[in-house]
Length: 306
Image (cartoon, rainbow, N blue to C red; front, side):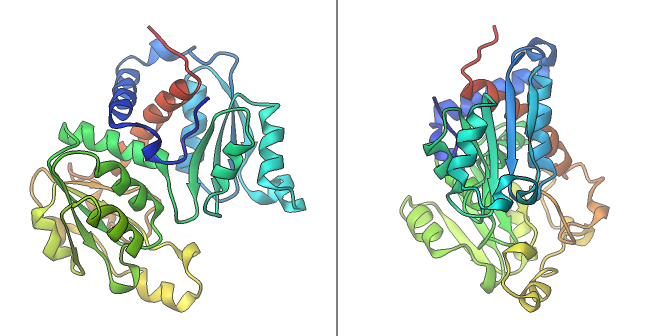
């Protein structure tokens, strides 16, 4: 039995196989429509979510399975003080696979240690968000045709952004990747990510504050929102929330084949005037998220479709 806690749980070869399966699902959805008949997915979301929860549920429904779960801690026995380990033991009696989002880093890891069904980490605090990373990789692969030899710009909240941390962990394993880290001083990539990942692996990167300085040299621009829920006080959040706004003026500086990704939800960091730009890939990204989660469910349940 396998779980997904981090993108590093899959080798590069396994990632490529998973992404290939997702592409086949996109091309031949009818072939997979009954692959999970009789299987049940439990979504245990202790934090609010739109795309991650619903895309997991859509993925299982598209495979012919069924879904159950809760969308907030208050609607579960966690409100009564039940531990994660007891919750997952309970869910293991009801479902075949589980997706968990939790505000505490490491909570899904605790769950998988007490679970008798596969557990998917659907985001834990500011730590990891591996299914978003799989979505990001599939999006980059589909729009650029490759996952190597690229300059990736990561913009916004690089300190608390779990999507950024997971994406870096995944991309550094591909040849010729370099990063431009675009953030204010207060939201810089944490030291442990810079020193223990980028420096340790000799991955080229530079840190800049101005988005305009980075855009002309990028293959992918990965925008993130400043996350209000990660701040300890309102004043710091208000000061940071509109630090970066991608608009048409800035997009004129970008190469014609530079695509914009965003894990969503967005607040103000991407102007709606960008939505019709052919380089805006963030809505495609959402659809790819369903295909890649379908592939992940099949992989963790060890279900093969000829």
